[in-house]
Amino acid sequence: MGITRISNRTRQEQKNSLEHALWRGVTQYYALEGRYPETLQDLKDTCGIRYDTDLFFVDYQIGGANLLPDITVIER
Image 1: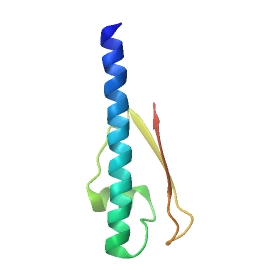
Image 2: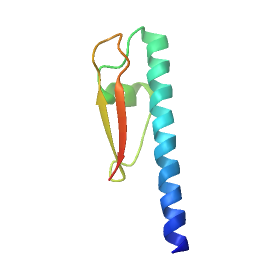
Image 3: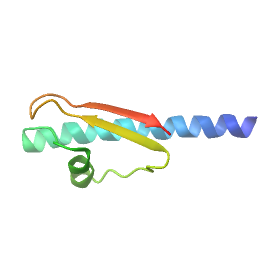
């Protein structure tokens, strides 16, 4: 029971860390390029963001070059 609680807390911390890294990356990309990344892959390549795709699914939707993307991180 205690190990499960620690594991759940660790996974939540990983999710929070990933969300923060993605938003920092989007902000940094916009500051440098004057537009938001067109794809999640662009963001990952440019900002060096790495995460375990077996643990998390990232949904990245962009409405346009100057519209803030919608980023959702989902635990698998």
